[in-house]
Length: 337
Image (cartoon, rainbow, N blue to C red):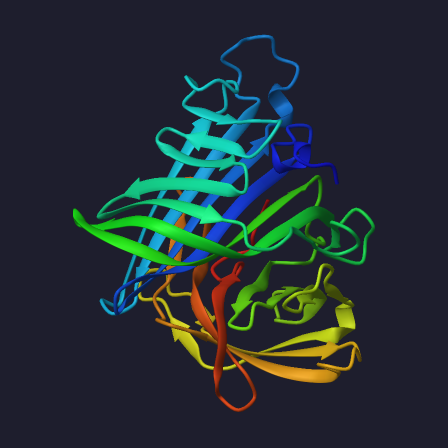
């Protein structure tokens, strides 16, 4: 990867996303937040000369989880990318992270990212400061997602971001601070043909470590491929997991009253760590949603119903050792990218 170029958009690739999640605190109150921008290349329009041809589409999802209020607020947008100037309502810069859809935006300024979004009953404006180096997932940023060589993505993460700013709920402003995680991926082809979706976690551990784990699965729940990484606090490079080193086992489930879909809102994730003297052999992590209802219905934009929410990471003794986000796709219907 070449930086800062690869922090920006890659319009020659079929699909791309910038995925920002985290936990925010306002005194004793606890919140989760998500802001995701998707860019999709439309192959049928690439040869058109018209300036109005929709050659690139920008989608965006934003959400806030109010833990104490047991509420999950979310919104979505879609637009045609028309350029890269500040006057364009939907755009994604190719030189650095600067993606915008109307007044929703994710912008990098030096070692800080600025994020803003608003929806029905919520809005946030956040500054997210890098505290660690970029984490290149997979083989130096080439992350396999299936047995086929083409089933992969370019993928890096920024865990342990320091977050601060303002969150508004029903017009009530709250000063917040917390931790966040940023993923950026782009690819031509990602999912194996018989995959219906994936399960993924990105966890900021309290000791400064970062854990990523994912699996792609069939309609019967069988794992097709798995992977992830673990970067210990103070380390510059991650330990990359082979597919056989990551096993997801579902625990408690929750059925959405809105979609009728059933999601595991508790997981046991078994990871076989390399023997590096500090965390050798297999480890069992428990992932637990902070509230069950964190489903997003994005059929008006990307067309999918999925579960995306603030979750805790526990060790084998039941102690909370981190927090982050759990994402589950393909439980309502097969995911199509």
